View 1 (tube, rainbow, N blue to C red):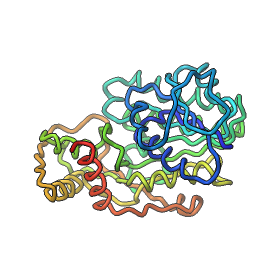
View 2 (view 1 turned 90 degrees about the horizontal axis):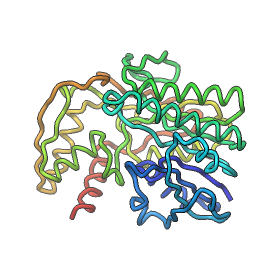
View 3 (view 1 turned 90 degrees about the vertical axis):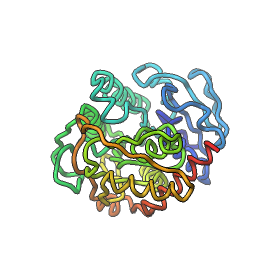
View 4 (view 1 turned 45 degrees about the vertical axis):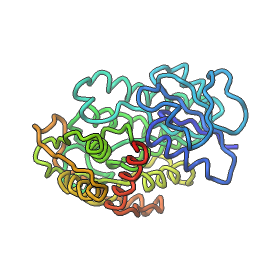
Length: 326
């Protein structure tokens, strides 16, 4: 039986990963450590039965067991990781905006949090450690972003994720923990009802007849990746041999402007007779102008590529949001 600890497992990516893991043929126990600030146990409803339990009473059986707590609590992290074969570290203070508003909280959550998780992996001999990073560590560079670019983070969020990648590197080289850093693009898709990133936010606001605000001109570019593609990469990162210590760009490899994405959302919403009202505001501090990834390393070493078309992914996401509101 595989035992996997997922920090932040009640969130968008966590729920999607758990949905995939429960379909694997081998027996698995999934432990979730989550503070419930964003995701909650209710978000797992309809995916798989989950049980809230005390960290000292996790049974030795298959199933999904949720422990409420903070990744900054080192003793709690140690207890959660005991006996695990792998850790997927998703929990974080996410996004550029929140990190600019409260850089100390961003540092404490993202740097102390991953340090606690890696220490738990080292102490308990956890074999595989998958870290959810971002393109933000690269910062303001000429895209496409690849793994060998010198990092120049612009936002506190980018700096804290870069620190996490640095700790993963040293724990792999010094302590032998098989770390795998996945630099996620702008992920979107079903189960994202609480996400504040652009696709989920615009769909949610339009459905609620709220104005959708674009910060800056809208000509800034991002690399949008559909959730099923991202989870496929995370699954490979968990189980594939010979990739310990590596970092991978996990994105579509395509550059789209925010305006372009907003226009696709607008067109697809009109098919459901839902109008979308757009407005512009000042650019946000910490945002980079261009961002998309070179995913050739992931293709070569992980055997992974993104398959979903942007419009089809947006169409699926809209169907999900309408299904949760009607």
